[in-house]
Image 1 (cartoon, helix red, strand yellow):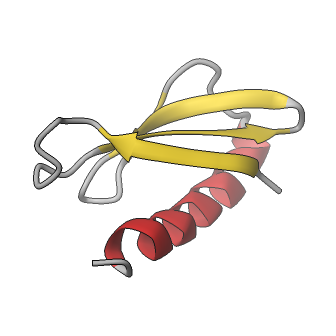
Image 2 (cartoon, helix red, strand yellow; image 1 turned 180 degrees about the vertical axis):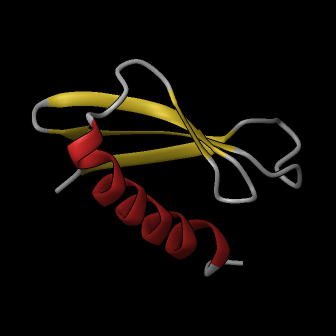
Length: 71
């Protein structure tokens, strides 16, 4: 399970989509960029293959809730 999830817009003009995110998973901070089309660009460190699908699913759910449902 990921914890301490945070996100912020990539651009000062908040109408331009794209968000930076960070969270902790297995005691490791993971960061990246979430694009409008749902593509995830992982920064360092990249999660392992065995965890990536689970993290993508959780990240999509969090972004849908925090970004798209709050409009």
